[in-house]
Length: 95
Image 1 (tube, rainbow, N blue to C red):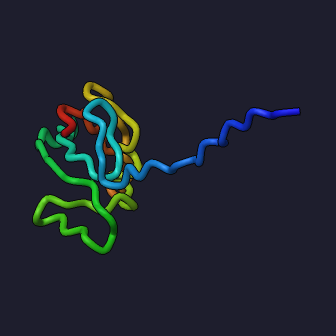
Image 2 (tube, rainbow, N blue to C red; image 1 turned 45 degrees about the horizontal axis):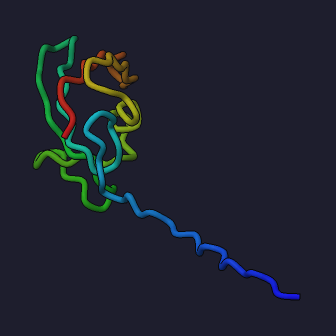
């Protein structure tokens, strides 16, 4: 009796760390938004907490603003709770 043996494929894990989809905010994305309360436009890249330097345009992915923005898209209005009240942020671009 002969048997045909087809090898089982080895599963692979895709590492998407730092890869940002242009249509959804993820770790590594550069996000532009307008604070609808103040009218101020801002752009930040979402990075690890170790690399965050808000003054230089990099924001910790663990920050309240970044957490609120994650998985949203251009045109979404996101509300972020801050000590001074809720900030409505309109997402204007994702890179």
